[in-house]
Image (cartoon, rainbow, N blue to C red):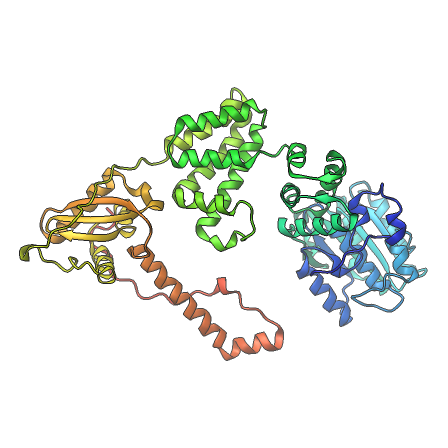
Length: 543
């Protein structure tokens, strides 16, 4: 939802620049809520249709808008224009709720009011009609902190609530709320706000505050907020002071203690090149610059996650992401299996850091472990510059130089090979380049170079010899991906089946009726095509 955002108390608030940004720019309407469209839509529809529940439970981590949403709901219920999803914001009820002065809105912090006596007093007052508003609204924050007796006291009112009372309960830990209370509430889970949405809101606020900023600095703050817009605004306040009225990348990076990401990219590039000396040199330079190495391990894990994302779903990396080029480069240099391994080592290394002899050892040991555990490649044979014509005795179905024909034939041959495990995986990720007599040349994409272990090559060579009934001299070399390996062709076929399944679902009359009449939405990722019947497994494929 993209709308102009206004400060909470309008011009009066603007005259008090000392107010915290989190308070000044608190949303005053459903439209101004960030990242919670699913909850806003449900509440808006309920208010528009006057389908009101007596108790709402809002769950989610800190700073995602639980209390703000509760106050907006109180305005929607008590606005002098009537029950509405768009409270006017200017009537006395709306203004007093915004200012925390509305007599029929009672807020209780359960973390500091856990006793049953507090709850009983509150519930006794609930029996009386509202003084000014249409409803008495009780907002109970961190409701999971109430004692068992306090919950029991509240349960009696939830079972038979007065018509003029609405409860809005908020918690960061819904699992601690008794099921008897949960079952009597309409529950909404507020999600963590994605960093891009936080960054966009910070940019809007700074533009209206006339504060100069760099987009990269806002991206750092948005990531550091970990899904909490309130935390992001608090960090933004600090950044403005730290940067003497400006929000720039280098001061923000220093303020947050964030690692210069160029170091992390260099570490992964050194790992991809198997350059241990360079790896340690970078670590030494990071220590010399007093970079917090625990944070470096944390951000290294985050970077590896993004590399894995770039390998699996490259379109998920935004075109304007400043790290996009570096991520795609690393995605092409590192094997997916290596990325998964490195991620596990980084996460475990951070957990082990407190037990390390010192921080430097705790940081470098995971890097050395990554270097030690990554599979070693094998030296590739160079192909002949001009292959000779095959003799009639060696003629076979795969001597054709036509890529499409040989790709299909190689795929069929791999499916019939008597080999399993990593050797079969090697075969599936190879492309047939040429076959001449006993010599067979295969090309392996760079991303799968980890499969070039001598043991896997020998097993594949033996399986090919068994298949042809003669000795095969296997030559492997690295090269660019072409889309013609059996694995790539199978993936292309799978995607084609998936697309046909999606199109079939979209054409289904029943599905179309649901979409058109009930505003339903088809989740493409949930569609699974009927897979073709698998061919019988090759003999000995599990060996």
